[in-house]
Structure formats: C-alpha cells, structure tokens
Amino acid sequence: MTATVAPWLTAPLGAFVREARVSLAVALEPSGRVLAQHGFTRSLDVMAICSLVSAIHASGSELGRQLNGAAFGPLHHGGVGRQVFIAPARTRTGTVLLLAVFDDRTSLGIVRHFHAAFARAVLDVSAEEARVEPVAGDFERELGRNLAVLFGRA
Amino acid sequence: MNASFESALTEVAAVPGVRAVLLASEREGLALNAMAAFGVDGDALAAFGTALYRRARLASEAAGYGATRQIVLDATGGRMLVTGCGDLVLVVLAERETGAGMVRMAMQRAARAVR
Image 1: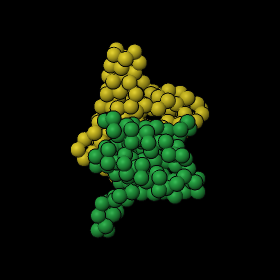
Image 2: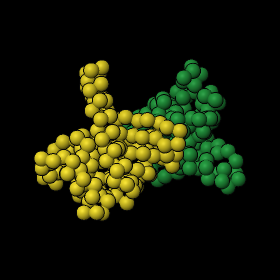
Image 3: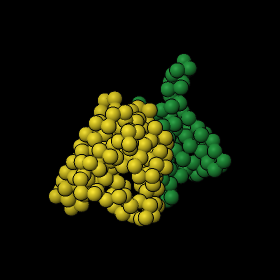
Image 4: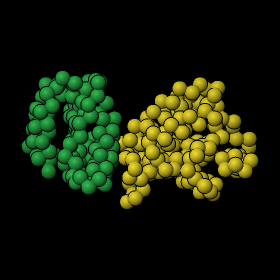
C-alpha cells in the first residue's frame, strides 16, 4: 500500500509502483525528509533508508560535478536477487528523489521507463500543490511526524 | 559486437517496413545496439520487448513446451517480433503490411550471428 504525507505524490507513486512492478519505493526530499512510501512495514527502515539515499544522492551529485561538470543522473545497483534504482525528479518547487527496489519480476528498462512517466507526472503538478510544508525548525520532529503519518500512528 | 552481427542487424533493418531493430539484454531490458526510425522510442521498445519475451519464455517453460523460438505481437498498427539469442533478445518493430517471412528469416540469421 502506498502511504504519503504529500497528497500530490499519491497518484504518481502509486502508478509507478503498479506499472513498474517494484516491491519497495520511497519518495523523499534531497534533505532526507520522507514524503511517501510503498511496501515498507517499519518506520525505522524508512528513516534509515532516507538518510542513506540522501547521502548517496548528495555524494553522487558532487562526484558528478567534480568529474563530469554536472551531477550524475539515475543510479542503479544490480544485486543478485534484488536491484536498487535511485533517481531524481524535478518538481515546480524543487526535487524529489525516488528509490525503488525490484527483483526479477521486472527489469531496469521497465523501471527506467516508468520513472520517466513518474517524473513527467510530478512536473505536471502545480507549484501550489507541490509545495510541501517547510520544516518548522526541528527536522527530527518533522521526520518523526511524517513517519507517524505514513505508518498510521498519527 | 562482432562485424557479422552488425551486418545481420543491418540486414534486418533493411527489410522494407521494418521501423526498428535492436538487441537488448533480457535481464536488464536495456538496448545494447539499436537502429530505429525517427519517432520510435528505442528504450521503451527494449524494455517492453524483453519483458514480453521473458514472460512468454517462462510461460512456455511452465507449460512444458520448451524453449521459446519467437514471439509475434500482431497489433492493428503494426507488428513486434522478438527472438531470444542466449541472454540477449532481438526485437523488431515492423509495419502491419511488412512481409513477416522476410523479417523472420533476417531475424534468424541475426540471432545465429549473435549466438
């Protein structure tokens, strides 16, 4: 089930999960603040994963800037059984990072294709809709509140 | 990519009515080599062609029918033909009126070249 604290992500993320047949997905801000998730059952997992994705994206982007003159795009790690795909998508107000975990039921080509559809969908969202409440001074409390909403404890 | 396969791929692309031909990895669904007409989304063709082939191959094995030789998707607007070559998949997009026999022969030659 797809859970979100950003209603404008519900349809794009739901469509991505359904069409790309990924088993886990998280949408987050580059800062690491979680916006939506699908497939996770423990909030601690999401919190840890968002921190890691945020760090990976930041270091990958900087590495790209240093070596390539521009931030690198999507990142794929092909494991034996499961694979990971991390890619940014621009919105009218900033950037959303999407992490997807998938297995042999689908393929990287399919995940990439539907990530492109996800990116188009979130770019179509108006700036007013896509505006997420700014963090009110306490990132940890905000993260905790979002996780509580996502896992039905709010 | 060896020269004989390049030549075979070019031969498939030269069949009248063929709009795209590409070689993709079955597991990743990504094109390794492609020749496509303007307007054909080669990435999407590779992703969906390999997904279709993979499903059909698994279904055929589950049914006890053995190895899958070729898949032909006959749609109102055209045809997609997919042939397996080991871990790779050869995908062809052709117009509706294209002679399927010529395309299939060219695909078989290309598949032999890549094996």
